[in-house]
Length: 78
Image (cartoon, rainbow, N blue to C red):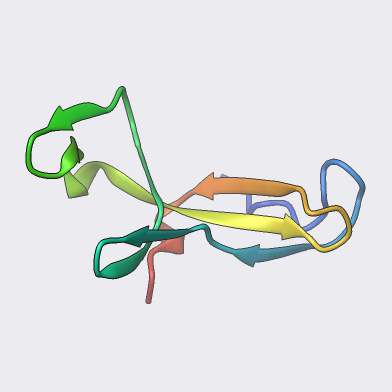
């Protein structure tokens, strides 16, 4: 797979890497992509096995604010 674009697809501006913060009860996490439809869970609200989740990195255009997200293992917090 090729690397995410560093040029905005909308206006040609410069893209900067970041992430969408997922505020949870008592913590903060990087959002994750999971295949398929969400499945309800009585205890957690949504059932999502951790081994099936891929972290999401989001790039933002400094000129127009356009966001472009990519789900790749390299976006896991370090």
